[in-house]
Length: 235
Ligand code: OAD
Image (cartoon, rainbow, N blue to C red; front, top):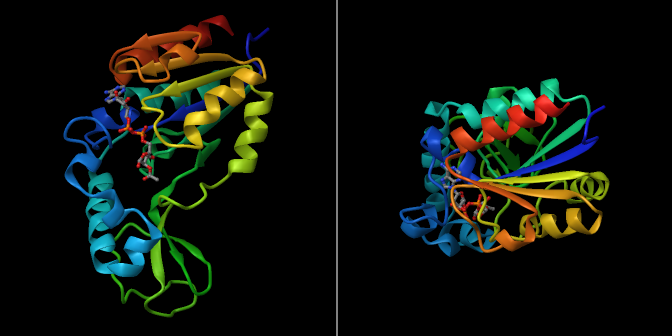
């Protein structure tokens, strides 16, 4: 008999750090180098779409070269081995979870490798650079494509579905996220209110550390495989 029937895992930039992708709020992180108000809001895109495309083109090019690390692979292995349900919710826009083999995955902040047409609404796979005059692969019109990324002030994807999964989960695991951005930062409380055990796996204690019933601190490539091995052993 497995201990946990429904596990929800929330990941953030820290899980991809050892794959060479920058986090946001650590020293030298993305929001240290760039002004988020100039790049990651709908207003910024309306004001200066070329600049916003340039920023996401750089990041898109970066993820094409990145490989999943031991932490991504451990979560894919958990999904494969665990007899209960695993829902992986990621705030990350990189494709490393799916490259590692995770399937039951919700990209709540969107995906770098997708574009969305503001005219026809089509979401298309996109791994190249994107420009203001790029044609939509679906409707063929130029000038309407935007990165399929949730910007500040926009509503994350899959929120209803995530809340349903949280209301049913008996284990909630938060990995490599500072817990600074809502609604993701509030998932711990939702899970806790429904009686789930709550675990934080992070490089260092976060501001919300006291909310978690269990915590392990260290590099994701070490602590995530260790924790997953223990879960699988208990199954
Ligand atoms: P942050 O940069 O806010 O937090 C990253 C967390 O990962 C920090 O708590 C670090 O201590 C931890 N960390 C760093 N290296 C690690 C390692 N090797 N192993 C384990 N943990 C490590 O990133 P997020 O919490 O993901 O949103 O940020 C949330 C959202 O803010 C992002 O999705 C993005 C950003 O603005 C959008 O772009 C919409």
